[in-house]
Length: 250
Image 1 (tube, helix red, strand yellow):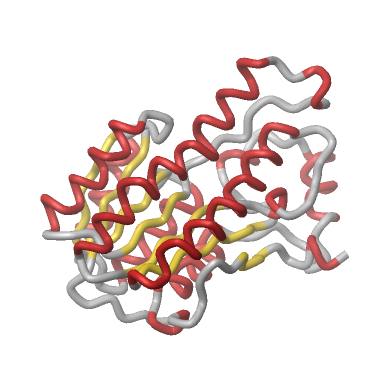
Image 2: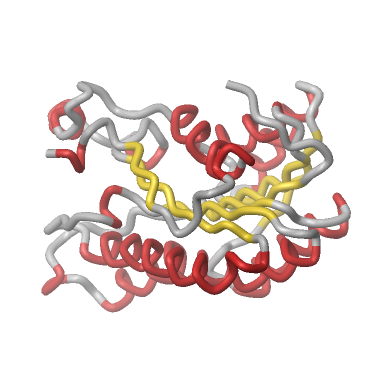
């Protein structure tokens, strides 16, 4: 599938692996200049080099999204390098500790909220003015199927992703008249590094949650993100796009 993004730029957080990496590559192949932002410096360099080798435009940025100053620097990088920012994908996230809410430590809670929810809020804080200055554009925030349903063993993650869903809707209402569309995407279980440590039994259980009979691929989610950024989604804002192999249809 082809998208058209001539002369425009995008910032992708968590872009050094998984869905973020696939998204950075896809956007670059379709004409966007991409800021590849992540905490993993070596992986950022690898992704940027691969994009450039394939004929795309990309620059690396090392940022921890739980630090608002680092998020601002990432946005500034796009503006200074590419002359403006038109699109953003707030993808960076962590899984965090598992266990019931009544046993979750304060530190485990805060670590997940700082990255998964506050990181998106900081992104919107600095991305929206930059995109408005560039004449408008679109933002996609990474939520999850667990931003729509519950899970007994992941209270911080579930809360953070529900927060992203609500934050996205609020921001879309506030900024749609300024020519900025803001949507959230809700993947099911996807073949990413977060799932790399699953044993065979846990993996089979995860597959069994998806009526389609398999886990998702990062490239499939990247295409859904690119659609939401594209002019083909010009009447879509404040939406929750679910790409979950039927998980939430049960």
